Length: 329
Image 1 (cartoon, one colour):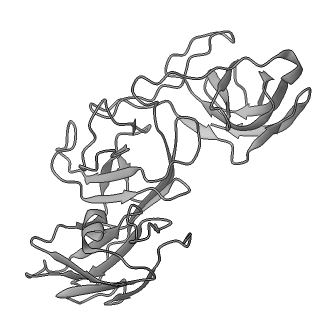
Image 2 (tube, helix red, strand yellow):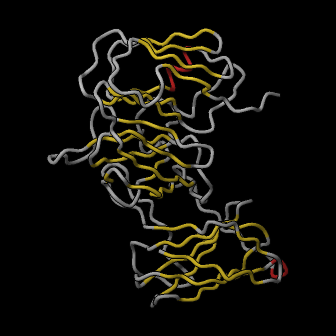
Image 3 (tube, one colour):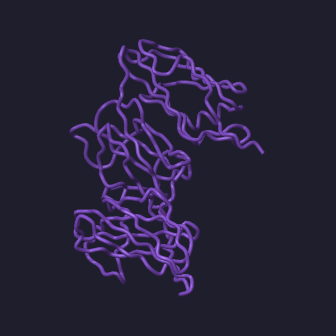
């Protein structure tokens, strides 16, 4: 079985070239790629009308039939959904840029997407819409930039036009380029507008429509616990531990948060856990019924609860208390 990732081995003209108006761009791969598959996975900003894609074996060409705009940066993205004839996939989306002028746009927005159970979420569509001062309501028309998250859940827009953007993050299950709500998973994010230069922004997908949360009560002999501290300046914070094996979730509510407030999550089945903290929109609740994480809404926009994820996996053993971990929100 061929498990090597698909790799773009060469591009002509060279990436980041300036002062050029190419009539075609050539891509070389380490595996065979069809024109049909490449066409599905490629996006261009700004759009180039009537472009064509041709391929032969490991070589592919993007044909540009008409004149290009003057003094403009063009960004070509080959998304991580691209696969070879043997099913090899790119590890992450590939961005190629050139400029018809003497300077390249350098705008950047980057982040990471998590599943509802706080695992890295690959192959999630991220669309960026450039906003102007009069922008209001949901974005319309085609996105200015599109990428897919990589195998580690990360995404990165490069060579963007400087400005402020609205991001739509969703699983494009039917591959029609549009978030079909409520039938497709989405991540609203905590901010409606992101300026270029924003990095390490976090998104978390909500549950699939109709999917219920899992709460598994272990027998007492299997119980373990996690202790740590939360650093935050909000009055209420929920600490959540999600079992990586079965997706079950345990939460505790921490109130009167000071610079560093201790927490304890007990009653945990043995196994590996992802630990996070979030600020609930509903600033009420008890340890018996902590408010669940609120995913917000994509259209119209309402923010998701702000959250953070501890970078390391936490192993819980039966009869043991694991710690001390630090979370900052």
